[in-house]
Image 1 (cartoon, rainbow, N blue to C red):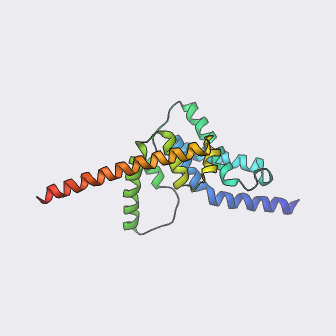
Image 2 (spheres, rainbow, N blue to C red):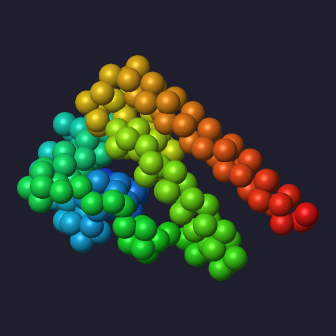
Image 3 (cartoon, rainbow, N blue to C red):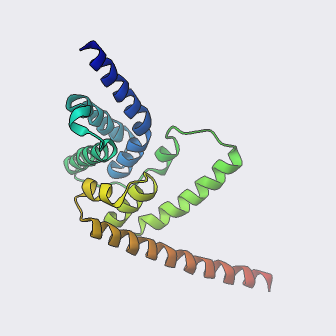
Length: 183
């Protein structure tokens, strides 16, 4: 019995170490508030402990994201508002240290992408973030959001197409501005 508890404790620690940061980022996006996101993630891990590894099986990531999403959306419903992603809070999430120049470049790219994502409908934003920020499969995204796998694929396709078109349009505008400045 003691051996099983130790293995269970080790499993919970491993899951916590691996998923806490990404779940806080995901919940921050959904709630618009990092403190609320941390509360949601804490409740998610409490439910993980109550449920146990045996009932979750090999679907740990999908289970965590689905529970976290449901708790975050419940919180948002209670607050009766949906705030935009707090860029400053997202920048303070734990991560590896990089040289300041790389961090500045990444922050600029991230800011541009966040601005482009913010122009998309919420459902497209969510599936794009789950796919590319959290490396989820279509099937996992489907389980988390309650959408069909084909709908997830469609939303990703339409959202990415829209982003590509906007990037191309901005590139053309920048090129025209640069040519005008040189004349």
